[in-house]
Image (cartoon, rainbow over all chains, first blue to last red; front, top):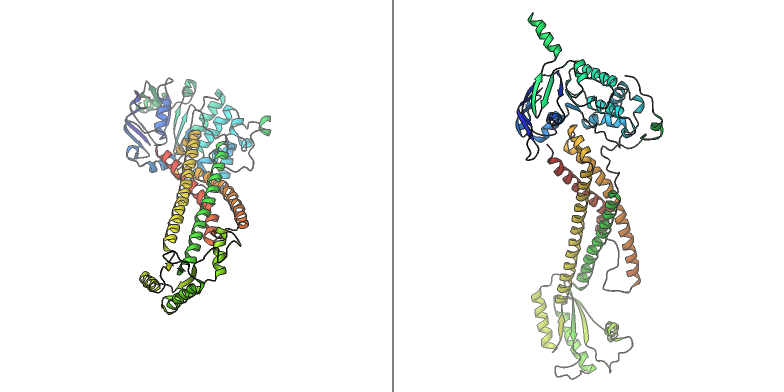
Length: 232
Length: 317
């Protein structure tokens, strides 16, 4: 699904914010991306959703070498990725419904299909009664759910979420993670950037740990246990 | 997931039922009005410029058609030595000239102008009723119409023949005057064309500047659409549609104001007794070009918006 080989990123002529990043995410996998503030999580997410291109190294997504890809061909890759931004990035002049419908309109889905899919999804995330409301009149938690609904409405093959539980209380955060797991079971590959240690402990998935621009991978206790069980 | 109850403020705030959907909030900008006014002014000028272009063309056409194949034969009222010719002498010289003209193959017709006609010609310069045969000797004038396609050589031969029979006679082909006038109107038409080109360029620059400003204001939203997988064309269409609406609104208002201005000018010139100017009537090409001006300006605005947005998007990965 995603392969990073010796990837580095620097902004302008500054120092490298990501150095020699190597990892592979298998299709259908679920990873947390964690590390201290300023470690480069958002920069790594940025590379994964093609907001930036690496300054060195090789990035392969959906089996295609991004470095050699034409700019216009990246559109198809982006359409397969759903992103939940840390600051939601909702369009405040649009209703909740239109915000969530936007990715479907971009890919040219028929309006009838959009109506039913978006309504159903908004009901599912508990915003069925808020379809015609502007996002900036809603609470942080509600806005976050709109951002999540917008990211998953196209049923992306890869979902990247940057601190998706940051504005939510623990209970809603856990429910959200359950929703992500549900999506994962349906085949979506997930990378969740988070600081929330409790959540990571509760949902045992492998972790990509970034520190000072360098990435290490930590298998989840659950996976290790399964591997150990397989040995004996 | 539990349904969150509708908050009280949401019942009154932020409802957007039945609103037209724009991916980018391009309409929520004060600069929109400025751009519409600018486009309206440009369209107003374009309407006047177009009218000037066509009026100059009509003037040149009127002068050319009035003088084409027309000559004036002038028989001087005095000899080279300064002696005034008597009425009998004038009649005799006129008849000699008429007999040459009548027999010359390139001449289609000729008319000897009466003394009253000649008086009327000079009256605007010298005043009505001030002339008398004794007070002011007038030359003899014969208006000559040549056959279409008459060559310069043939006219030169006619001039020589006239000169041999009527000493001091002058055959005026109006050629040099006509050439100067046509050159002058041509230069004015060129100036009008330059004006129209400047208007087009100003419109393009103004729209490109406005679009750049909008791109800066909505950069985050544009980037968001880009990251969601919107094609460059999809994003530029947002700006194109906006530019089209503003362009049409501004240019329609400008052309309407310009047309009213032209009507006023037409009414004012209609009140004047100016024979040199053509009647202020709209020709079909002028009507068509004036009617299509809003579309052309809107099209320029759309093209400028498209190009500006595509250039800006090309900088994104």
